[in-house]
Amino acid sequence: MDDRIEKRIELKAPVSRVWRALTDYREFGEWFRVRLDGPFVPGQVSRGHITYPGYEHLKWEVVVQKMDPERLFSFTWHPYAVDPQTDYSKETPTLVEFRLEKTANGTLLVLTESGFDKIPAERRAEAFRRNDGGWTEQMKNIESHVAKKP
Amino acid sequence: MSQRSHSRGLRVHAPVFAALGDETRLLLVAKLSEGRPYSISELTRGSSLTRQAITKHLRVLESAGMVRHAHTGRESLFAFNPQPILELKEYLDLVSEQWDQALARLKTFVED
Image (tube, rainbow over all chains, first blue to last red; front, side):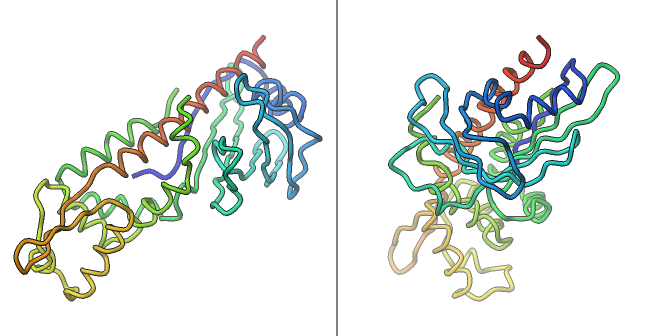
């Protein structure tokens, strides 16, 4: 089983444009649908409120990890912490990474979210290769759902 | 968006991942997922581990909901329960779908 989600998307815009959309807190807020209190600063908590219709009661709280200009923006958070009654802070956060690469037509954005568990993927994959029961099918189903998408 | 699965979040799913983070347990799950219940003796056979060690691993899987056991006569039989892994898949599907939507909005945002 894969413990990470990976998405690849080609954007017809220069890397500098995509970088700004990701790291300027107002721009990020527009497409992500969150109203942020202030700029992103590595090592610091970013707070705000979700503006996605129907989820406005939810807080946004992430810890900014890396801001490597035009290459990597990352933060940790609690994915889809949508129940206001639940204290998600006790849960292990996942790591979200946006990586940018220049392409002929614009920018390749690779998004990964990892840390759904702390298990080295290689070890699990190895163990699964040794069985050909129903579990393998189940794993294929999961993989296909979290597989890379264009 | 499914409120139910979202709000349960990793609190529910992390133990499932954690239970799977061990090679012995993975092999046990692989065997049990073949479709029939097994006794501890059967599961211990061919393994270098003791009956006690196998039992301990089965308890971890049981507490994560992936294994159920029933007594038949003197032996305990252990059976696979796919539900937690199906819920895990559902959860990852939702997180994945949310990213698809967010990235589609980003695409529109930077290309317009």
